[in-house]
Image (cartoon, rainbow, N blue to C red):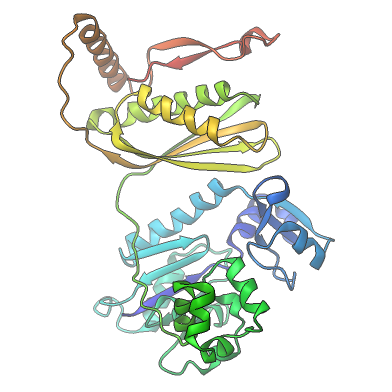
Length: 392
């Protein structure tokens, strides 16, 4: 196995700096989460002692003279998925992007196209965007390739063979494990990969379970984790900026219905339904909220989607007044056969909805709407009701 790792350091921070140039020379923390549960997603390189996933209060204890930015996760993933698309289309279809700014690529079998590592790395750099100080590493596993990229020079690349002696002095913080496990390792006096590799397997397993065995193998430079390429399939994204911030579930639900109706118009010709739906919101103070909804059977109409979305919104409260709502359909599916209803009235409604669907397919956008009560208590007439596409 030959794995190539591409690191795009400080990816969220670079995305923020691209739209807010004033952050370029500032000391910045990019935060995710809400209230007292905010954690660090990214940070300026000069903030020594700060780590990803560190709670905000601990990061401020390291340096309190920093600017804070609330993470815009949909923006980052949109940019990152664009990079993954380019790599898939130009370099290799075997591409995995497990987290923002980290890419794994199966470099095996590319010798006929790229005769050596130099030509492969050159081709990758030609298709990557300019603002990133790209680092590239090549090794026989994902974690060694990651370490090779992490310890390569900007603009260069590093190939790891069997000589992994440099790993022993690296901090345990480079391990792909949770912040809790890293903290426990330091509490036990295990600060470097060399110390972890020399530690007996038994005590590690008793404290960390199977994860302890995996960490010890990684410390020896052994990683047999398979590369999991992205699934090929159409991803449909829709979002809407609300005319005013919303505090009620009904208002958010109405916005979601409008977005789902757009999706049904786009997929109606294929006769497919929604299997996986990722729902996200952005609050007034830029806090991100996201949930994934999976349907056992593809949702073919608005009724099925509405009931599940309503339940999720009730069970998982928003972090604050909602300003933007978005959905991402990551998997479509075909329905199983259904028997028509025996009742004439229900069959008639089904025929009517089919006629509406055909009309919308022909026009390319929703054509029939219903009036829905949203905020009947509002003093502003325009906010009491909304026009919502009928869906299907």
